Every structure is written in structure tokens, then in C-alpha cells.
Length: 244
Image (cartoon, rainbow, N blue to C red; front, side, top):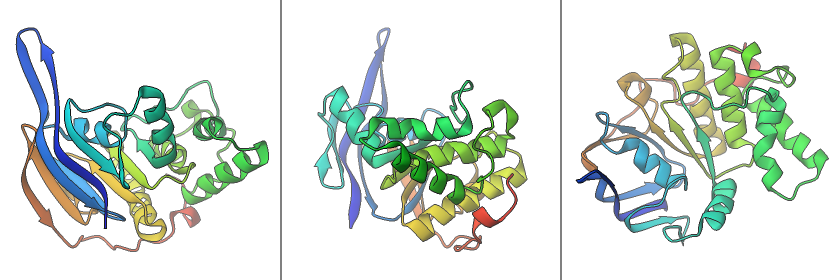
């Protein structure tokens, strides 16, 4: 059953006298619980599509139906509320607030919800356990490695228990061991928690963790392929290992 349905989804803007169309009447369905990788050259529309699905931006035309709701024409305030409930975003450069502790960074999305302090603490603690950083609550981002920062960013993305996780080049700024650990963690969230995961990547090896890879060019799907990952689909629990 589809959780995401794009119908002739188009995004365009004007730059001087030139009309730029990052997405051009794109049709796409994503099944609930899928792990989808988006690939393509720079400017192909990958991140634009990710931002539309995440509710960060709105399309010029077309429909975007997520879990039965057409979010295309929601007001900014309603879209922000919807995004807080449905989507967690993992950024390439983490986007952590440097003056806040890891705990405070992860707690931030929960402040938009009607939860008591003890409820927030329980959810934050659970998120830290899931990403394998139960002892890094009081560390500031500058005190963490790149891999640990990305784990905190993932904890922030999942702390509201969203149905969908979107990730924009989640390993692009990491060394190989840290990148491997992050991909195993994302795979675990998909396999064990059933999260629908959509990831933009330029790396074919990273894309192999997904169940399906879609290629975009000039705002349109040009090729797609289902593949059986060469990596173990049920990775060992990251929470029990050493933090990268």
C-alpha cells in the first residue's frame, strides 16, 4: 500500500528571464515501509523532491498525497504541524544547534507537541538508545565526532516517531567506517521499526542499502531498478556497539 503518491508533481521558479523546473510532472508511488534511494546528477531534482515530501517546500502544481492526505495546498502553519507529526529529516551536515547539548537538540521537535517533561525525557532516552549513544546526552556538538553528530541528528529525526524519514546525503560528510555505521542504523530503522525511508545519495554503494533505486534527470524519472542489497538486510543492533 502506498504511503506517498506524487501526481504530475512540478516545481518551478524564475531566475532572471529563465524558468527553472527542478521537477517536471513527476509521477511516483512509494510503498509503506519501503527504503528508496534517489540518484542522479546535480540539479536533477533529487533534493527538491525530498523537500516537497518532507513538507519543507510546496510544489508549483500537481498533487502530493501522503498517507491519504493531499498536503499540496496546506498553509505554512498547517504544513509545519503536519511535518512535525509525519516526517523526520536527516541532513548531510547534521544541522545541530551548537549551543545546545545533544539531549536538547533531540528534544527540540518534541517541544511542538503537547507532552509533559517526563514524556519528553522518555522519548529522548529511547531515541538515544536506538542510535547507540546512551552516554552522550550532555555533550555539545563540538565534543562529538562526525559519526556521533549524525547519530544525534538521526535521534532528533526519529524522536517524534514519524512514519517517514528523509535523508539528504546522510553519509556525504563522513569517513568510511562512520558511513557504514550510519547506513546500518538507517537500515535497522527500516527493517525493525518499519519506517519508510527516502534517501538522496551520489554513492552507488550507499544506494545498495535501499530496496529500490530511482534515477532522476532534469526533473523526471529516467530509470529505476529493484535490487537485493549486497549488505546484510538485518544488521546487528547498533545500540549495542561502539559509537562511531
